[in-house]
Each structure stands twice: as structure tokens, then as C-alpha cells.
Image (tube, rainbow, N blue to C red):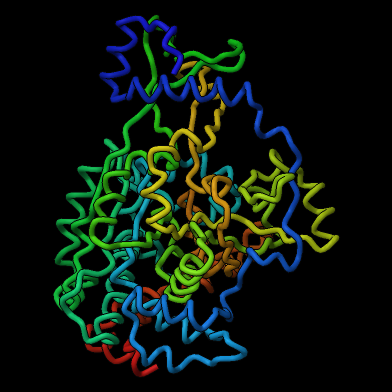
Length: 524
């Protein structure tokens, strides 16, 4: 750390009053200086080629018999499942159904985590939503205004994840995620007959602005019809998560003030006035470190991690089994979900590799140009977009928790807002990919695994309420096609993942008896 920087006591006091971590802010400045000197990202990147063995579609998997036997013994998976495998030339061949059942038996070793982010004020901001599509905003104006108020100063996770065809608000993002988790827990209980072993602990990263409201919401969720019977039946209670609060760091000086950057000290034109900002969800590796260590002590060995506003982020037992086998046999550190590019995908993080062949996430238009992407795509390269879902080996994380926060890239973006010209430093969770030697890339269907809502209007697009777009000639065709695709994916999730059924034009939760009948893996 650069210890030569002297901060005015008034600035320190102001930042601490706002909740900023001064020590971490100074570390960020030092890390940025080091990164600038090393200039580690100056080299060109390319797209992965067709047939890259690191990209999987989860259809089948082949593993040596001895390694499979060791894996089954390590995770106490019943011998009866081994006997269902096809053995060919010394290899066990795993089908999707084999992987599904094995994945369920891994639930005692698996945790599910959510990155909550900040409040949903920006999510429901009318100006930002209008920027998506003025025509679509006008179409949804009444619906939007009716819902936007509840978003102000509330955690996004406790706002509605979808809206019915008549505009009625559905359950929240977190309620649906908790219900999905409990349905998976029910599948384990039904398949294994074990009702005592702790399984699928829920954990989260919150912030000062969301923590208290989330706790209050969870107190109510515990008795919600979506969860109550399942909690009692499974003995799993996601409304009592392992949790840690993300603090803030100080804003930095704008690039116009030159390099190296300093701590921004004239917010609103007032001397020694700072600005405390979130440092990005990549800080989870620092903030959640005690949680990861506690999970490890509880014998958890795999952790899911994803964003609260992605309705497609749920546990996938096929993916879990696939990764666990890759971790056991090849030492894979994590698996990340990416979706194939569609015509409307023109911005976001995509999978790239550097000159040494290491995979990472690069922002389209920044790390690699759109023209270069299209050229490589025409020559058979894969274009895969980041779906912001990771499945990590907890062995890997725990061994590297002290190093990851200082190795993960820090992205600095200039801002020009009411407080003045300053810069925000952030870390992105998914860039941990570049720190790994053998990550697995899982190619998924975007409308099944990545239904993300950065703006409230996008939630309407993906909801049954989005059907009003079909008869709206004034709305851009790209918006309408995207909405159709997302609606199809969300409907499948509502029924097959969240255990809801349509009734009189709305969705109602299946009863516990219905779930026991329909979700029993032993009957599949």
C-alpha cells in the first residue's frame, strides 16, 4: 500500500461517517498504481474456437471407472446409481438423467448464494427506463408508475420478479429463489429418504442500505404460503441465511485530474468532502470470506453464486454433478454459465482468451471490438455471453480467499454527476475466471438461465404482462422478439422450477402434496 498519501483528518472523518472503509480504499489506490505499471491487459484477445473442450453443453460426460468409484465414495452417493451407468472401454458414461440424480445427492455438500446489490431506486427510475425504449415505456406507463414507487429505497430482491397478464404483481425475486431452493431440498429428501442431514444452506451479501429491510422481509417470508409447508417438510429454512454486509469505499479522482488517481475530496464543491460508493459485487470474495470459511467447516464443498435479479439463476443438479466430477477428476476450480449470442446481443461481457490461451470475460466494445467479434464468428469462433452465474469449488475459494481480492481486476469508470466529476472503482465477480487454470464453461439457453432485470421495464418484457407488446406496432421489433423469447423462458421457470401453475389467468403455488407427487425424482 502507498503509505505516503496523507489524508486530511476532515476527509477521513467525512468518509467514515458515510460508511467508507479507508483502509480498503487506500489498498484500491495502491493496486491501481501497480496495475498501471504492469499494464497486464495490453495484449490482444480472441474468441474460443469451435470444439474447445473447456466449453460443455452437459449432454454427456465420460469419466474413468476408478475415478468414478472414488467420486461416489467421497460424496456418499448410492451404489445403485453407479450400477445405472454405462461402462465403455474403461470409462463410465454419464447421461443427463444420471447427472441429475447424482447432482441431487450432492445437495448436502452444496450452498446457494445471492448477491443482493443495493437498493432498487435506479431500477425503477423513469428516465433510465425510458432510455430502453420510449415506445415500450409509453405502453407500460400505467403499470410502470404503479410499481416504481415500491422500488424506491427498497432492495431489488424484495420487489416483484414478474407481473401477471392483467398487471398484478407476482412474488418477489427472493421468494421465488427460496421456493426453488426448497423444492430442490424436497427432491433430495424424497430421493434419499434422509430428513435429518443439513442441506443447501442459503447465504447472501447485503449492504448497509438493504440489510435491515431484507431481514424484515425474511421474517414475513417464513410464514408465506410459497415457503411455509416446504420449510416444515424439508427442515431447510432459507429465511435464516448466512449473511455479510458489503461496506463502501471512497470515490476516486476523475481522469481529467491526471494520474495517479487520489481519493476524491471535493464532493459538491466542498473541500475535504468525500463520496462513499459500493465497490462492485466482486468484493464478495473479501466480504463473504467468513461465510465461505464457515460453510467449509460445515462440510460444504460447492457454492453457487449469482445475482438476485436473475430469475434464471437457480440450482441445476445436472450442472452441479458435471462440475463436481470435473473438480474431482481434473481439479476444475469453478464452472461459469454463458449463453450463445443472439442477434440482439450487442453489448455485455463475452468469453475471450488471451495470448496464452487463458479464458476471461471481456466487455464487448472495450476488450474486443464488435467488428473483430463478427469477423471471428464468421470463421467458426464461439461467441458466448456471460450469464453471471458461477459454481465454485469451496476448496479452491478457501485456499485463495486472502489473495483473490487483490488479484481481481479493478475497473474504474469516470462519473459526472451532481456531486461533481469523480471516478468509481469496482470489481466484478466473474473476472475471477482469469485467475483459474481449469475453469469449466457451461453453454446454456439464455431464456432459461439468464432472465435478468437491470431495469423495471425489462421485468415487464419478460412477464406474462409483456403480451401487450405483441399488438403494439409502435414498439421496436427487437424489443418484441426479445420479450417473446424471455416470456417463454420465464413461463417454463414458473412451472418447472418455482412450482407454480396457471389458474384463472394467474399463477398459484402447487401444494405440498402436488409437489411431492410431481417432483419425486424416484418416479422420474
